[in-house]
Length: 310
Length: 311
Ligand SMILES: [Zn+2]
Image: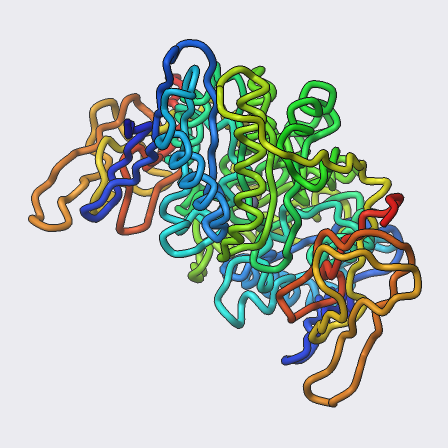
């Protein structure tokens, strides 16, 4: 059942509408699982996850206990023009939660979303990195809520759970706002902006059904899932560019590297020279890899998860 | 006057972007004035350029007091200015959401860090900036309520209003907040325009900064005394929201006096031209902020009014 969360009249002939698909099982009042996506309009991985989750439920609706609500597009205008931020106001939507019923238009929209999700038993906020960096499927949670969220995060069939990643600790995110309201909310990151990886998507959807099964919401067969590496910021090595130029990686995403391995180089198109060679200072898994070639001093090139064995 | 390099951002395709500072006088870092951080803050850059011009003259006439140093940084995001983008670089980052910055962080973290290291030691910090909502304001000085704010100092600018804003989590990354956190008395000066130049309000802003510097004993400058500022809390402003979207035709401007029931704006149907809504003043007051774009959405804040205190 498609339901409207909020509708705002735009200046010229259109409405900004946030909609959700409410899928009710045999006992709708039992538990409510919420899946949201599209806060960042340049991230599409959540579109596949929304589709695939709804498809699997519709195929075997009798297996669903409780309710699943899917909101594929929290920033519909952004998604329509692949703009990460809210068009026109040029703001990151994930910096305006919990919103304000008496505030600006988007603050009102944010408040309506928070109100609508409130009371859910779990919420997953699906992200797809950005157009710069490719990521492995991972859950990001802030340290503040780690005790509560880790048991759920382990069930999601992701490769990694990263606690206290700076992106998620921000107080103005949807995840923080929902966690403050007592809705266990996890940020799922995977793939990269403007692309869909079906392999990563299926992996996470298997995890979502596993989580629902463990919560008693899904009576389907057991999924074969893997358990993630749990890491904190201390185990994540950030490698940033020291120069401005074009980054050419020498390794594949989602691979192990050893100390001393060449990870890539930064070159000058004008001079035809190598400006810098990037060498691994620690061994580990390259879980984030830059895909966008242009770099400045400070641009993130890779993130390596250290302290794990091949 | 000395020109100094505050921070340099290299590029593969263009000249390096050099953030330039202009200093006057020698000695204690007394006051720092920062202009445009965003690529559309042309008015703010213009005001700073006029300040540089005025201070150069004052310095030549021996009117910068001994032992006091003033630094003016007219533009930070020169790239944004030249390519017409409000935020910085391909990542579209707002430099004013990056403070205090990180030495080893992302490019914009490094820019913020590079600037902040230079400017944090000044006793007074004045930023000319724009708000996240686009529109026009009554000229005012804005301070964050951090516990360190000092509204009576803000009165010394002699602008009509001083506004105290309770910081949200997002505000904690702004320059103003971090300056105050470093015990700099920080003020944000808002004039009525951003992406166009208004000479009258620029002159008012220049005069208010010079007035402040004079009153703090940093320069000697003959000026009229300005306004006696009213201090208002941002949360006490009365917001007027639209009930529909369409073409926005504002009928009143910032600074105007309005009475309860007075028509503030018309929302016009963009297809058939009829007036679909007339926005009425919910209270007697003075227009503090006005939406100025020609289009508006349902539920938007069209005006913010200062509820008038009856004498
Ligand atoms: Zn995202």
